[in-house]
Length: 69
Ligand code: SF4
Image 1 (tube, rainbow, N blue to C red):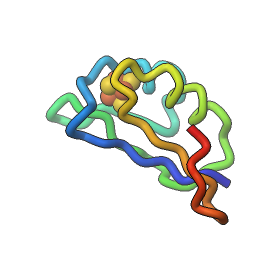
Image 2: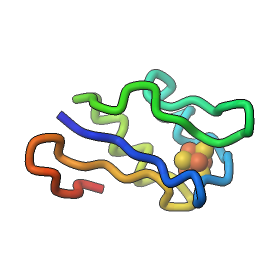
Image 3: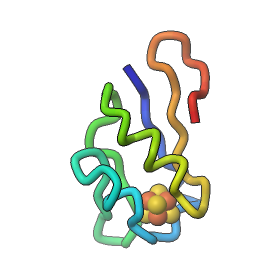
């Protein structure tokens, strides 16, 4: 299980995370990404974190707390 966080100070609204994992991320009214499901086992969260051009997405192992991406 992964825990997904977004640093909204870094997010610039490119929305590649929404393209990669539309069930996990969406853009809010301010054009910044929000996490719909903070805990997930969906590996698309890892791809979204890797693809984010601002490195605004962090993915942690929900049990150990260690950063995965
Ligand atoms: S890909 Fe990164 S910068 Fe773009 S909306 Fe998602 S979190 Fe924000």
